[in-house]
Image 1 (cartoon, rainbow, N blue to C red):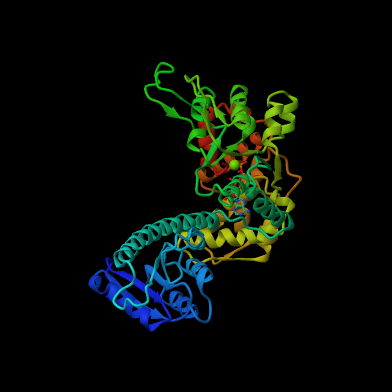
Image 2: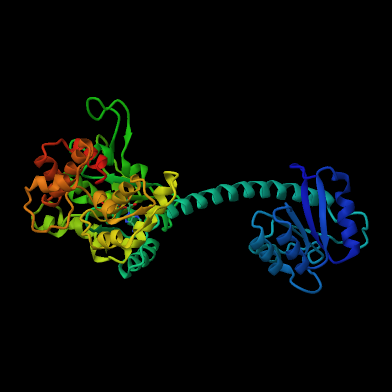
Length: 485
Ligand SMILES: Nc1ncnc2c1ncn2[C@@H]1O[C@H](COP(=O)(O)OP(=O)(O)OP(=O)(O)O)[C@@H](O)[C@H]1O
Ligand SMILES: [Mg+2]
């Protein structure tokens, strides 16, 4: 029976005489300390450790063993197999010697303690038995702590693996393969990265992949959408404020940069950041210092910044809407995510991926897709890129068929899609005729298309919101509801 309080020992000793001495020394503590196994050489020790995973808390090992692996090599090997196991070395070598050098070698190899077993004429116990017993008890405590630490560490690693799986980048095209390669390469370094690409291409996904592949992966990853924060709140959100720094500041507020300390900040739609906040951001990047509202001294932070934009940021710099110095600081490494229409081979793979994903989450059998539908989808332009494709797949799944055909693909692409390129834009009747839809669905389609059209023809989301007559927060909410964000 495994008792959680019992200390399980693996004894590695090749001399019968010494095995008996160890056993006798431990005997009075038999209810606490149990010699689970005795082996006479290093190779057997390794075999037992591998076979009886996590059984042993402490290994007691003779330093000099005949045959096979021994000494420091064996210590290192044991720690490699079972890092939390603690090793108490018993040796004849150091009786009455203050041999610091030897002790240092043992500790460096990973041993917990060492005891001498001389003089050879003592048959009943190991020399200085109380030291020996105490070292076992202490070794056990340490192994418990290290086991617990190892478990929580494993949990963290598991979490990161889960996130990386959920956020995996689907696609086989040369451009996606290159993107994945760049992510792994740049994740290791700590430099700032600027990601550009049209809306829905996967910029945020790239940022996630960089953070969770970097050495900061166990720290916070904070996403800040610079366009969705109201202009008057942006600085207090980003940099925080001290209690009493203005009317209404009834308690200290940490900014998002402070919360992200040691981690990564993802600044989405960076061109939307007001100029005053750009100055403060520059200071964070240059000096690692936060300027909190109402505070004279600075707060130090260590963060990596990944910024993203779907606008032409150089143009913003030229128009003096974006600081040039900040642009260079952010753009240390530049990653471009290409439009979906430029990597058409990924389209069938993405469709298949989302079909599997959504049919599973809807508890449906995965439908197949016929070649007509697939041709249509591969040749479509995808102005909303992967996000649009994801929405279209979801819509296709609402049609209760085993096979998705061209007709249902067309419906899913929306009321405005049909083959006749030459039709007039305002030919509403032609549109309706081909797509008799419930009013709510038609309304949604019209909104979605109009939103997309306005966004495409505006220089920023702020401008788009203005054109649509919407407050920024409503604009973002609606864009989200329409699946455009
Ligand atoms: N290669 C891909 N594999 C799997 N999913 C993807 C891929 N590219 C994008 N997506 C998915 O498409 C959606 C849009 O991606 P994301 O939010 O990263 O785009 P974005 O470039 O940040 O868009 P925006 O500029 O509008 O903010 C997300 O749900 C994302 O998970
Ligand atoms: Mg985004």
